[in-house]
Length: 577
Image (cartoon, rainbow, N blue to C red; front, side, top):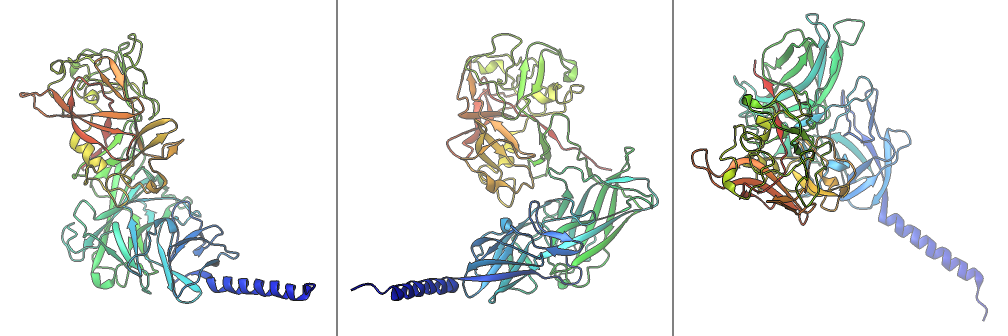
């Protein structure tokens, strides 16, 4: 019997309809809108594609949001709305921007992190684009995104008492309403880990910890690496006198009785630095956040004396700033490992005899890979016995007897940086640099389980990662406020080191005259010995790591005669006026 072509075509068409209707049941097209109440301002992180058109937030093609557990790329033809297809379900929960939205937990709760250092960046001449989270929840096909916090709008106005001034940085502190001191006893934390209920029409933050005075009671607005804002304000009415900047703060209920103190650090270009202080005398009326913008007029007509952090990066230093102890001591790292050769002279501390030349490696990944010692005095060396600054113990000392090395180093001229001027780290002054102590290395890395917090966590993957830069294995250490750790793991091969980060190459070790472990192990001296000046020991502390895992093996005692790498730091200076 011949086949019935008409019946075959009908059967194929029926299967097509079945498949089409099945797809329609499995997906739904959502429309996303950005809610706008009064003076709401919704913006996005650096690199995001939501933008501000005047005062109106706009979607843009190619932006990404998280809906339920899916990262969705949106499309928008008018900028006002965005549409996308997602798996169909009973309820749609969304958080934006996608990169800061951890998986939704406990039903309607999103885990977020507000950075202590918030990065200033320009939008359209007048409006700064900053990171502020949004959320939406709906059982229909329309998602209306709401701000999860507030943008504190600080209007900077140059008063008539000044010539042109340049704003360096801005800090905002949360203090308890009615408090007569800076103690934030009942204040709202302004940074750190938080959770947010995205189902609420007025979403608020719940922080994991209460703020601690001088530790987590404020946020700072600056450039990446805590560099100066360089916002110039003229007192000439024909030029720019006014600038509006924004700091992201959590949603605050009017019943919380909170207030802010705001400090603006500036200079007049003639060496004079000013700190302008605005302290509220009463709490804000109404809620902060919840799709509102809090305006703070800030006229720069009076200056007060207060602590000011000088954000000028020293010669020979990287731009990143790193906290190295619980007292918030901050340091810059040198741009490369320390190197020495016998030829040349340099300045030394205490009027000692200058011998040889010191420098920082030109690149962070540079080291002198060899299996033997330098052949002559013109060759550079970068693996040193402990305390071989040239203060009675020469950098070329290759003895295998611990007794020939420095008895003690912390705070003395046996510290390479304390004793020597560095040719490419300000050759005109000795004593600018120093070596970290073992406790500071531990705190910096969050090793073994506590210490510095970076992007909400401590230790491996947050404070540091072990990876490759080009063909060199090493330890990448992230500066305070860094948020790009998720881009790296032990399989990463970077062609460039992210701005402000420190990279310690695995330069191996020297045992007497034999060098081994190149590009496999990294050993770095600390300035800490296990003994004292009056009771010296043969050991000093060093930090070591290798390429076989993303963990620091230990910060332990080693024979002083070992030749290890040295990376110096310089304290971030402040002036207490």
